[in-house]
Image (tube, rainbow, N blue to C red; front, side, top):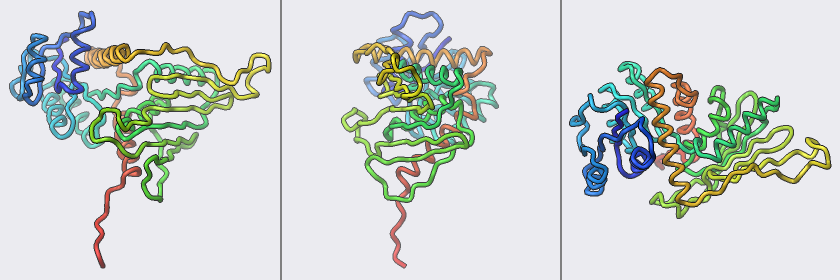
Length: 323
C-alpha cells in the first residue's frame, strides 16, 4: 500500500517505520509539510516527492495517509484527505468535535479514520493489558484503577484505561472543587469501579522531557492482588494479596519479566508499533473488523473524556469583572 506521511517532526517516526524495517506491504510515496529545508532534505534522502500543498498530492497514487501535524493545520489536512477518499491515521490527541466530523466524513466517503494513541501498543502496556485480561478470564474483576500521567500523556493514558475497560460507557468524572495543583488528582467512576488519576498539571515549553515526572503509571486492584505498571516502559509487577496463595509459595511481589530496553531499542520498538498502527488501518480498508479501540464509539468516548478531564485539571480562567 502507498502511504503519504504528513509532518516531519513526530512524523519522522512513520518515515523511519516505512523505510527502515524490511517489509513489502507499505511504501512511503510522499511527504507533505510546511516547506522547511529539513523536510525537503528528508524527502530527497528517501527519494519521494515532496509537497507543501494538499491540493498538489495526486489522489490516485495514495492509499492511506499518516497525519502527524498538530493544531488547525493538521485538522484541515485530515479532513481534506478524507474528502479526497483517502483513509487517515491521525496522531493523538484529538478533540471530540473534530473526531465526530472526521468520522462522519470518512463514512460519507467510504474510507476510514483512525487515531494513533500509540503508547498502549508498547511492550509493557500490552503486557499490562494481557495480564488484566488473564485475571478477568480467571473470574477476577478489577475493583479500582490508579493512574499517573502528565498533560501531554493524559490522552494516551486514558486510552490505556479504555482498552482495559473495553470502552468508556457509563464512566463519569467526579467534579473537583478545589484549586488547581501541580500534581492534581481526578476521580472517575462507573457502576462497577472507581479510577483515580494523578496528573502532573504542568509542562515545559518544549516537549524535551526536562519537566516530565509522570508518563503512564497504572495499577489495577483485584481481590487477589494488585497489578502495577511502574512506567510506560515497565517494569510490570504483581503484588499478591496475603490470602491469595499458600504461605510457602507467597512472595512480597512477583515481577512479570519484561526485558529492559536501551534508548535505541525503545525508539526502534516505537517505530515498529507505529508501523503496526498503519497495518491496522490498512487491514480495515481491506475488510477486516476494526479493533475496539478504533471504532467510532471508542474514539468519541476517549476524546470526550480527555477533554472533560483537562477541564477539571485546567479550568478556563474567568474574567475578574467588578460588579
